[in-house]
Amino acid sequence: MGHIQSEKKSSELLIAEFLRRGSLFLENSSSEFGLFFSPAKVLDVNLDLENVITSIFYEPGKPNLLCKTICLRYLEWVSLVEKGKIMSNEYQDVYEPLIKYFERGGTLRIDQGIYLDYGFGAFPIDNWRERYSKLQATDISDENLDNVDIENN
Image 1 (cartoon, rainbow, N blue to C red):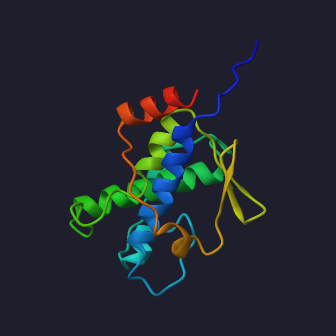
Image 2: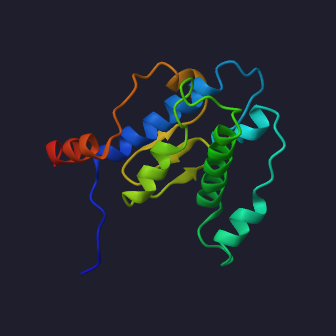
């Protein structure tokens, strides 16, 4: 019998936390940036990590473009924090919730350009900055996420 991914409440929490953190990071940015924005472009820092991503993901088509983009954005974030361009005490790591989501077996896709689909539900992504900036912060520690999944099973 094939492995069937069970619906996890933690998936929803992690994606919501990514959307919240991203919208807060962009709060003072007047430009319209997409959902998987480049932190380097937001801060107007020239950062080229394409070669790094190409060296990590050398097999054509794997993983998919969305996953590669998220990994690239995460590397940008880490690099900008290391260079002191982003203060970690000022902004929580925008991409940490998504990386955790993938580590916990999640998958993502953009559905019709208007939903971020995670398999058991979807988040509308029109007006995402206004929509998700008002969310409460979520504890995304592994312990809390595991407890949430146990409680909702």
